[in-house]
Each structure stands twice: as structure tokens, then as C-alpha cells.
Length: 306
Image (spheres, one colour):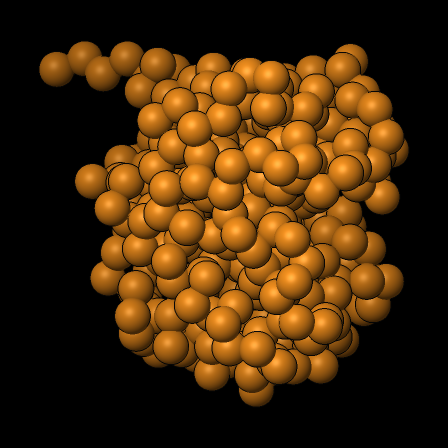
């Protein structure tokens, strides 16, 4: 069974030790967007067995066309992934994949209440309540939304990890760290980066947030440009991976999909059920698989003496 996750200062702990886990984010779940075919148990099982992934993220589209608010099939896709992750003993992020979540607070509360009732007893489940806020106020807009959704989850599930998005596409973690959420345990904050666009300046912002004592979780990162396209930026990706390992920051690569764009891990037409050979991985996908499969177990960093 996976260890329960907890937050202590700026670290996420598993079995009382600083820990980080690496895996893949699925693409938006939205109907007819092309990535929804990968929301199945075979894909999750293959990521565990072939990629050594310890984590999978279900990116449930919300207000955009074909998303949850108009097509409840999106929720069924998410639960298929969550059930498979639990069966494969992986952590799974239930992601309210919205850029405007504060405008849908009542719907988010109802959704996360349902997920907490269904899965709150499983240590595998992580709630990501606001994917990427835009350039809106942390203290006046995002934080009040987060407090309301967290309160609703915590009334049902007292302890599973909750991850809160931060301003400017989840980059302004330093701003959130100036006014953190208090009164609840096991809260982490979202940091997203795309190595082709975001360099040392964003690592500096992340370090500032860590220094101020909040825990970070990279629920989405890319080796390409922030628009999801372009070539792999190898040296910046390596710098980010080093930063995440040093600081025990968990991460999910964007995205498990076969759309023609740089961030897609799979070539067009790759099987919807896993079983991919190396020639079916893009440059981004091959790099992500290498990083994920080689991600250190937290036990390798901590030698227990009895």
C-alpha cells in the first residue's frame, strides 16, 4: 500500500520521511479533444509496470467545451483512472483542470465532496482543486476559493493531500507563500514549469516559496515551451529535475497524449491501451519516461538504522 502523505514545513512526507514521486499527467479529459481515450486502466497499469510511474494525474476539464460541466462522462473517465491507480498502488491526482475555478466554486465543492466520500479513505488520492489560475489575486480570489473547497473536503476527508493552484498559471508560488492557507493540515501549492520558457528566474521564485515554508508540488511540467509545443529543452529540463530532486518535489509530466505537439509523450495513433514501444514515444515522451523510471525512491535517500 502507498504511504499516507503529510506536509511538514516545506516538505511532503511519506512514512515520516521527505519524499517525492514522479509520473505522468493525462491530457485534458474533455470529450472529443483526443486525449480522453487514454483514461483507462490499461494505460495506468502500463505506466506503473513499464515506466515505473508512482503517480498519475487525471486532468478533468471543467468549463471548456466537452468538459465536466456539460458532459458528466468526464467524471467517469476520472474515476476509471483513480480506480486503476488504487489497484496498481500508485498515487493519483484528481485535478479540477480549470483556468477559472473560482467562478465555479459551488460545482467544485460538490465534485470534491463526492470524490472525498468515494475515495477519502484511500491514501492514494490527492485533490488538486485549481489547476492554473490566471493573473488574478491570490489573497482576494484564489485563496478564498481554496479555503471554501478545502473546508468541504476536510469535513469528509481529514488528511489526504490537497494541492492549491497559484497565480499566473501556477507560477507565483512566492506570492502564495506570503499569505498561506492556515488552519488545515496537509496543504501543498502548485508550481508549473515548461523548460523551454521558464528558467532560473522561476526556480528562484520556487526557492523563495520554499524558504518561506510552504510545500510545492509540480502537478504539471513540460520539457518544451509553455504553449505546449516546440523542441525539448534538455539543459533546462535537467536543471529543473535537479532542483526537484534536491527539494523532494513530486511531479507529473504533461502530457500523455498523441496530439501533434511537442509536449505529447506519444506519436499520433499510439495505442490507447499502453504497450508502447520506444518508437511510439516522442522526444518529450522518451525523456519523461527516462526521468520517471529513474526517479529515486525516498528510501534510497534515508538509511534507517535499527
